[in-house]
Length: 223
Image (cartoon, rainbow, N blue to C red):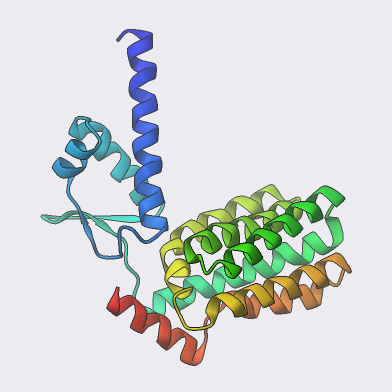
């Protein structure tokens, strides 16, 4: 194959993968939705081969399930499995912020502060989509500030799998305001070097318990 053609094909496949991943993570493709290879190939003006390759890759990330006779389906989790995923995510977040409280640089702190300011602007404008994006930026800045690459990669991996659910959670009444207030508390504790306090807040921030978990499940049914 001509090198230029091969490079162009690789670029198309990468863009297709990114687009599908983004749609799943943001909830545009809801859990349980079937992804038709032919329809996707027509939409993105590609053959079915890169579509199939993208779906296989997404299945390795846990974002898609490949089922006999049904093909590719956006992964969905049972209530128990979903709670377990949030529970692990909360522990990784707590570990990240504890390390960040000890290891953060001024630039790390600046990145977290900038993300929090962007969250505040999105909150003021009532823009849930923008808030979701800046919320992810806030958390990633904390992972980065831990200066532990393996922890960063692990947290990103699970965060991606929970992306659609975390986005839906923001639809719960008053959740965006509470989320912002919790972010502010996390930043204050982190900036003071109080890793335990920051970890406690972020753990409660991520884990969904009791009535909040029931509300999320009800929202998933509606979605």
